[in-house]
Image (cartoon, rainbow, N blue to C red):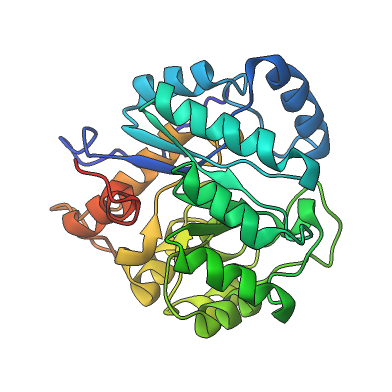
Length: 294
């Protein structure tokens, strides 16, 4: 378990704020141990897992850290796994109300329209796409009809964005590509993970902040820091930022405490977020796009 120390003390009384972790990963019990071992090796020690990768492991951390809801994001690395992954997600949504399981889709699958319809029929609210693990460039125009169709069906599309320690540069996604996608789509909810582009935050500030796209906060404060985070939020708008940890690779408690530390206090002499902005980022934005009542 990571033993992070928050940069600053949170504002008193705000620890109970409604919180949604919009970016987590879990595995079936029979696969979790092997998945964590393999992925930990691929991630080259950059992230230390904070759970065993199981559903129960995530639920335990959520209870301890005051996370009200998590979104679980699968990555389909082989199109043949499409049905199994999505049926597992749909089944868990019936069993585990504390976790919203999204579905998965592989861009190389030429049955994408049929498969999107299947995802919708299962009641799943979104899909995860990973350019590195699925070997595609997000701004490939051939994929735009797939994005458009998924969005037209009400699905949220979450993209991995930027650097991944298991992949080699040049990375297949960047903020410029997500800006192009945001401009081209006709509506719907698109999320660029890792604050718009993992380890590409100069480009996020220049090209992506302010566009019609959501960003999640996964990867976290120990990488992008408080000052950069505040600049991006102020330019992009707190209404389009989603709290996230990338559990089991990120510690949601550490991320939550750092977010809360940015609230205005009597001692505040630097930039800050209002209480309403923090509430939006922590959970209200997620509740709105997930269409859940709190």
